Length: 97
Image 1 (cartoon, helix red, strand yellow):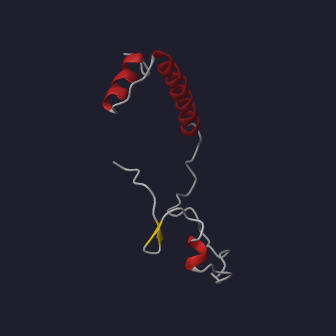
Image 2 (cartoon, helix red, strand yellow; image 1 turned 60 degrees about the horizontal axis):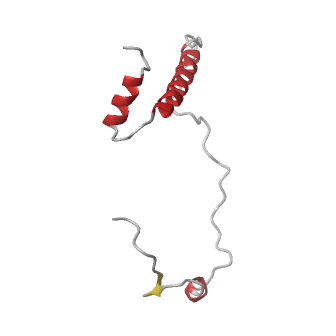
Image 3 (cartoon, one colour; image 1 turned 90 degrees about the vertical axis):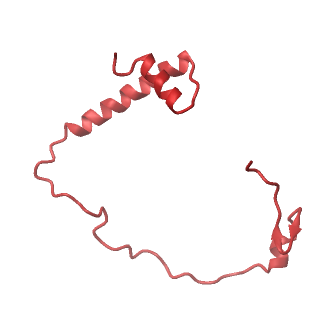
């Protein structure tokens, strides 16, 4: 079986509970081939004398500022434009079944 055959993508889609058309499979093939080329490029880089990094940021983060309280809205002002307010909170319709 070819590495990125139509059957490969149909099985993958089936395993993931997706439906894919023939056109989508062709696009996926192109995308996977492109990603494979990029991985091969990374694999070709000589890293023999490169020391491994455990943590990518050697210097501590020092550019963060201290939090300072600025202008604060009252709860009444924050809720005045809400369509439905219940017990001091914005009420929204349920969106998850």
